[in-house]
Amino acid sequence: MATLKISDVDLRGKRVLIRADLNVPLMSGKIASDKRIQASIPTIQYAIDQGAKVMVTSHLGRPTEGEYSEENSLAPIADYLREHLGASVRLQRDWVSQPFDVEPHELVVLENCRFNVGEKSNDEALSKQYAALADVFVMDAFGTAHRKQASTYGVAEFCETACAGFLFAEELEALEKVMANPQSPMIAIVGGSKVSTKLTILDALSDKVDQLILGGGIANTFLKAQGVEVGQSLYEVDFVEQAKAIIKKLEQRGASLPKITDVICGKQFDANEPAILKKIDQMEADDMIFDLGPNSMQGIEAMIMDAKTLLWNGPIGVFEFAQFSQGTQALAQAIAKSNAFSLAGGGDTISAIQMFGVENDLSYISTAGGAFLEFVEGKKLPAVEILETRAA
Image (cartoon, rainbow, N blue to C red):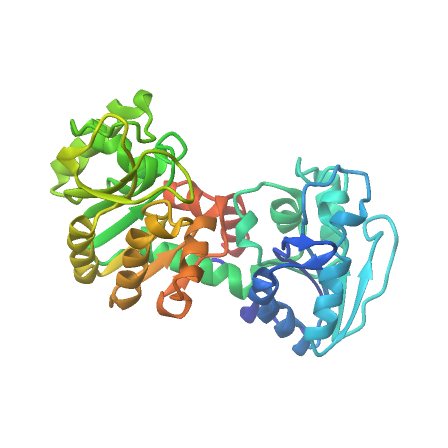
């Protein structure tokens, strides 16, 4: 089902409320990374340029509802937008109970929505108060699309018009291209320390992919499920049977896991631990796997070059330590060279992308975290659902 987009709506002279994701890291009150703000600017600037009376709100940090805290104030974000937008920008602290005016081509930053009592519980009365502020509600915070809250869901129920911003629409389109209409061969790369945190994702992907490439503790658990000894490597003994079930499902579909023939080991998790290359059948009892070996990666790179669709969430090894980063580097560079549609998401994945300088070589890099993962799991995101309902 389709959603209405901001470009489909006449905004001239309208009061427009945008829910953006401006939850950026701050250090001593200064913005440490502006990536989320930059991703939100096209929607905000478009509304301003259309002659709308523009308001934008976001959450920031984890404040206590009903309590203002300076460290969670959107004041630094308002200052940033004032410097980077061709518009008048001001911060409105009390915006639910106090009336305020907005002029055409002006931007009013509405203070942290999580200061408002009832925000996280999607309080109906608060949602209606939000909706009363605007003629048009624009949902552009895909990173919060999995949250059924007053500023992400409730306001969209009651505002006269509800639509998706440019960032929200782009995120949704990229995810649907990979998960709903993937071109085959499709490969998913899933890394991380625990199968338990990504079991539903792995299960969902096992119904779709042609190859499933695993990294980190997740890979170790699957190696154990295949009868491979992994020494003292991180793995989850309680999830070996679930791993076996996923392997069986893949095999029944004609899909597969890559064959792991060599690994990079150490004896302890330490930045100065020497890296030792070993064949997988030569693991000693006190060895710990920290990366995949070059022979294993050669096979994985060949798979990636043949793929038409790539989904990447998580590094291959302990890429934070240089001696255990070659697998993730080879993976990143292979995805960058591939002609496949490539979608990457997740904090560690983005860190790896930046570390190895391939930001401009992937088809789409998602700004979302939990929403990205829940969509991949096959869950219906509340914010997507309400926008589709309103567009029907």
